[in-house]
Length: 216
Image 1 (cartoon, helix red, strand yellow):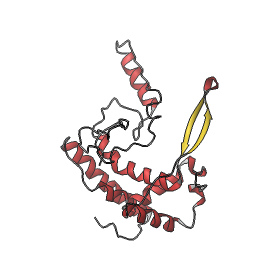
Image 2 (cartoon, rainbow, N blue to C red):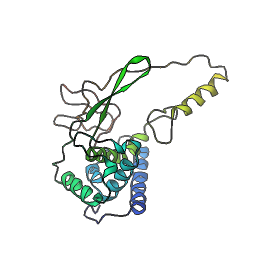
Image 3 (cartoon, rainbow, N blue to C red):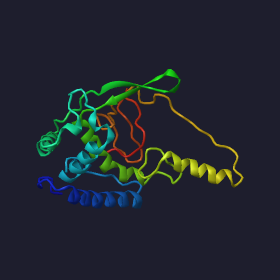
């Protein structure tokens, strides 16, 4: 892949990203034990960064700044400079995420929910990672899985419950894991000592267990 290509426009970038995502998903579907190599370079690929940045800046949280005080919506004319610096750091392996800015959000019942707001740079890298990893992980999910998946929402799960409830099914079991990632907000599944086995992600000693599979 040519990671030294000039910055594409959004249409060109989306076309390239979709093509690569289609291949990744097909490979993952055809071979459940396939090991994916060189995924890191895709995160630094200009097309993936352009699409990731478009999603970050178009998100409704783009007006909120992280600990660096820079809100994604405030970066208007310096987009290429922003992405070029970020890509250079990724390629040189010197990119380091900053701590999130913590904000408490009121919940029903008077409780507060902690919200972590990453920096614009960190959000862009996260979005690029999602573009790379999502088509691979999607190959593993069952049709009845609705949580945090593309083009799926809670209403779809409710509709399926209604479908089965009208066809003699009587029980609905709901489970929730409280604060599962609170101990380790940053998953180091790719750090020293971590396994990169596609079938299971095993963290280094003392680290929390990441959800999902196939880190690369």
